[in-house]
Length: 343
Image (cartoon, rainbow, N blue to C red; front, side):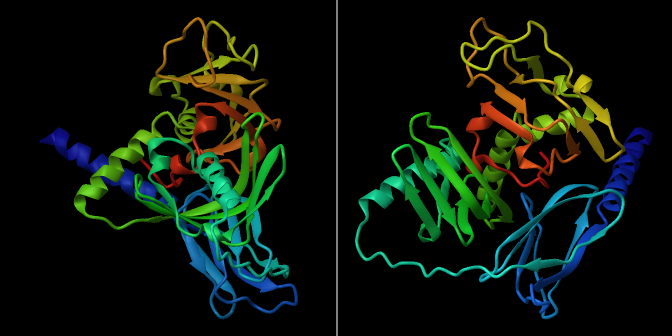
């Protein structure tokens, strides 16, 4: 009885601490360049489930946030979207933003089957959503907002409005604000930039159980999972093994022994670590080393910046921090989870 009571007390205390740490907010006023408040602008935290609309005074409020890295995105028809990178460290933030006027283009109406556009959409779906089972369960509900530009060597896509994606495998509806997408035909390399917000789908008990299981499968071994274990200094205990990459082209050559990623990190405070890879590393998850490795066996991680601040959620504010290939590089929007997710 004593042990059970202790467990309950510890559990309750842990919940109290978690609640106390999630009481920060980001708030402010959204205005036009002339200073007039903008009503019903969409304000959201990228890669999260936090979204708000501005009121008649242009005010927004997003609460329930813990200390960590965040990207605040503002979207309103007729204005240029804005994104601000920020870090909450023990206190709430107030951020006012002015939006510039955008050149509004009228969407052309397609009245007949466009074979070229169908070809572009197929390339876009595979490269943007991915080709995993979770990606196969995704549906883009409004492909008409996509604008394509095709040349011999690449395909480019942009959108002035949210892409609405329903992920029937993970149980989310995703609003994705696509800034740029490029698919290079010769190398089949894909790069895209944008911000998204997640909404939970409603479903019956059977569907919710399926979503919970699929989310766990998507999470374990993911880049988010890895960064969280690096923050907690228990990567190897969670099945991640980090090797120095001797070369970056197959067959892979890596160091014979793994390196604890803690040698690449330094503690900033209780909310952040500084991650500083001196060179490319190769990360394997629950996988035995073989004589010949390929990119699909693990993930190649090359730092672009001198250092990156990472929080306990596995979030970092600059998407250009890393160049990723291999297993993680093949995971696209169809396998993405909001940073609130905990298995």
